[in-house]
Image 1 (tube, rainbow, N blue to C red):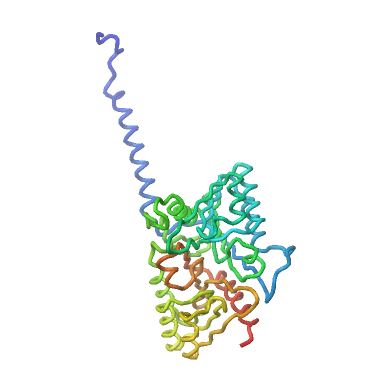
Image 2: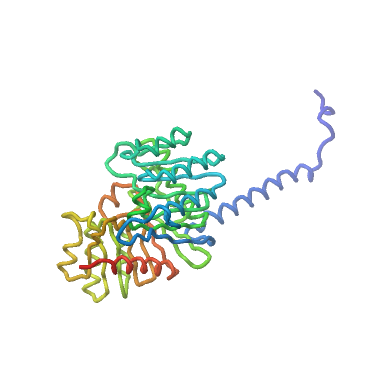
Length: 362
């Protein structure tokens, strides 16, 4: 082959242009990566909603509007592309049907559940419909999450197990967020547990956006146990309270958290709370607090007071799937949110606290 077959020689400028374009593209990509990885602590955007089961000393009627299962079904119905659910328990037929309907209309649905509950009827229905379901295997802790990630944009999380009792008999709370960064946090947790080859072990402990700030100033700090330190952030919030600490706890056995609350009570801060009768055992913090003359009570209603909530100074809250126990911190798969920057969320939880406390006669 002679040189004439290669065409006319290119000028220096012509040879330089492709290199220049590649250089510009590389710089642009670098700036984008720096923008999104250089500030992982804070991202603006999104909205929130708070829901409670509103059970008043009995069982809600099946035709009650706006129950937690109906609200969840409505959210599932808005999904366009993907639904990932990490669910300790799923025996709600309406919720399972909503997931199957989403799958049938082309939404990618994946469920991860606790091994102890994997053989239940509604899980088998999901399998039969072609929805992939995995479980955490036979490990020492529980897969105790109760969250959904919808379209990698929305997050549903709280104390509500997707069961009939969870919606109609027990007191529960749910938060619904429209926030891509927060959804990325939960999506990564789902991927970590769903694809983990060693059941119950999470290989990557990095939360992409440890702090998310919504457009109204709401700040959300995200933690996942057992891979994250969840106790220290709780203690920091308790120790920084200057006026009041009010809690609703299905299970409260973590000594360090109880000790910090007692110390704050002795410092003159209002510390009061509600324990659930079903969560009482020899390790409960109730007796020690009662012996210290702290204003704590036990909910002995027919349903379960299933909240896992601490309200601090009437303006910050701690909530999630996380019971205040050693197992929640070191063995179970749990999520914990600390929410600041808006009093409206705290006010909603305080209203729930006073509603339940007002129904208890002790």
